[in-house]
Image 1 (cartoon, helix red, strand yellow):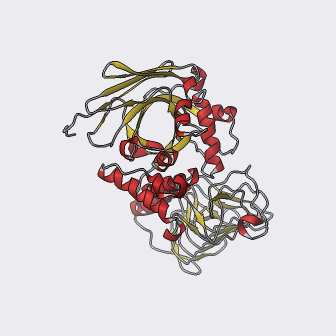
Image 2 (image 1 turned 135 degrees about the horizontal axis):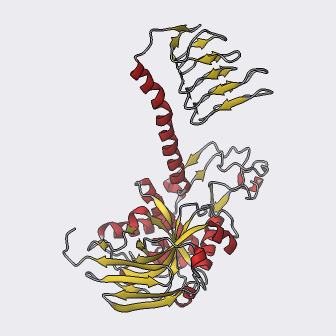
Image 3 (image 1 turned 90 degrees about the horizontal axis):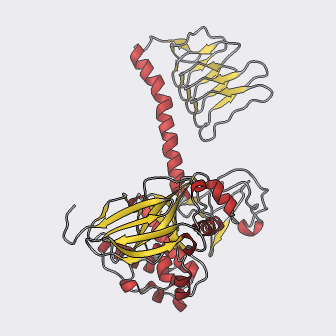
Length: 472
């Protein structure tokens, strides 16, 4: 069923069979007695009316047609646009009919007819998949609601002075008049906010100039390979956490607009020692893009990163959404599909790693690249708090740690992330990758280095750094 299509059954029954395709503004309408049925893999195109008819398997009903049925009569395979097929018309499946009232036309060659009929469900199925993928893409980008006309919605999330619309969950709080200036709506199970205007990107005058400047500096540093000064100096008082996330989100949105794909999130600052160093009491997070992945045993090209360091982590891959603002360990355990050993190659676009909390958050939590092990492990087979980790560089020990060093357990870190993202209206979804944070100290990487991490009960993961001047 596509946009504005309506199934109007009343006291009768309307059946839409598997892989059938009812397009924009069409109305399958059931009279009091006979059933209205759209057969398997049939296509009813735009602005059609099907009243009490049985559309045969793999039929194609052209734009603007009306099909009237009575009893078990079945509609022919091909109905030309703007035709009117009268009730009880003596047409057999496989015919081509056209006109008002519709009459039989010379048949189309068998292979041509078969191609036209069979191509439609597959083609529109592919369009549906593409449309859903674009919705997932938009779901990761800020959606700025400008003129809200909402009948039912379940959640609005405030970000500064802007109201951000996100994909919704049934358990969320109802929309209030405070958010829109309109009467409050009651809770609804609809998963997408309905509004008159949804803009994927904010207008330039919606974003403070200092945020844009900071995002520009970081983007330029990543593009040119020349580190920039700390961005905290662009903000009064060194900036705030929300200011830093605004910078991060601006560059994430730019990446999405350029065709990059988000595959998950990373958690940073999970070490109590690092938190004390930066004067914070909670972790931070950044976005993971698909093009950040390096294969297990692969090599990072020379010059790809500015000043890389490597840390070993536990990676989690989700099999279910985590939409709740107050996520629990039980929620997480149900949602995680499997765990993997991982190496995160952190990098800073800030010269000399001269970072504050604002700098690292603005810089996508100092994220560079990541490497995943190749053998999934279910959580029933491993105690993540008790795992031990050894990471070597060129065969010598570079870092050691345990699961408990990551916020007490990698699960605790993931619960924090799930709650923080849901609070911001961008919850973790099934299929997302989560890098839960370092299990031990990070180690600087130089051209020619080879790192290998072994995490007990999870396995090993390895990456190399190409020597200077090495051409791939």
